[in-house]
Image 1: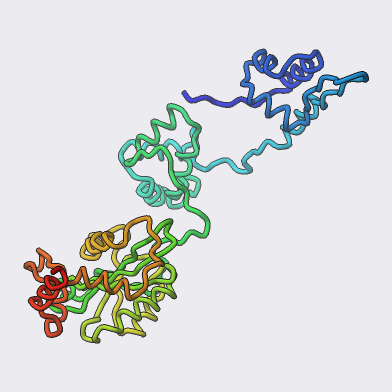
Image 2: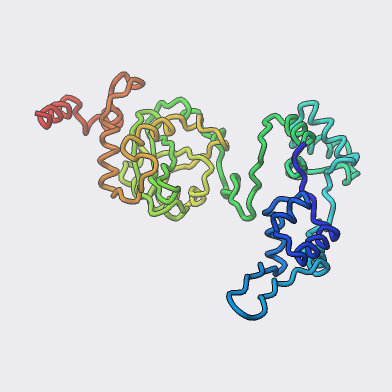
Length: 356
């Protein structure tokens, strides 16, 4: 069982006042009360006690600042915070019994919330949202019961991060078109022109670089971002996409990051159709995730990505696009994306010439 803090009583405060007047030191008083020295020190400090100073010469000694037991008790009572409303899901209630029963059966809090609504549609007191259930579990005092209940969860994390008020959540992008509504030819990768997009973040998430990868040829484009806002994404992705011929910018699949909230404007500026992957499903944009890893060779984690100009990002993308890929039969992405504008043999001859 974990330690439970017990509030100081009026009897203890009276003893503190009495022993202070008798000249006892705070450390001695703490030992007499069975309290830590820190607890007593904070009690004295917040109630105006000042340690008596020894006289330096002739005259009356300074009086120790006044600790009064009755005043300290009234202050403690006034500062005590009590919940205005008892938690809906708490031990000892019928709702708690049902929640814990379903938890032991392997239900998740979300499944429990749905089941309770279906079983008790006309009894609000026997219903609770999954957030209410999670909060009730993690708000329990530390001890064996809390550990046992958390152990019934599928992922028994010792702590839970609460959602912050006003926090942007997935699913708030207007008029999203799901990845599941993409035409079959995009999935089959028969025709170039269908892209996957994402952001690479710099140190402390304060800088970003946009990445675009063509699904068929693995051709990569990097975009300089002023920040990770929706307006910056529209401007930056629009700039690099409009450098590509129209028949090769047909669609883009992106995650549900808030930077793509302006996808309709991006479609209007470039003619590209934007589809959104499912939340927490990076494998649905696997080529982009893999390319991000390759780009990290030149854009390392922890660096300030705002220092890279668009010209420098273009040079990095060119290195990636002229690198042979096993999945392409050891051909280069640029060789497949721009077959009429790139000569593989001339490119490598130039590399050897530079090396020489």
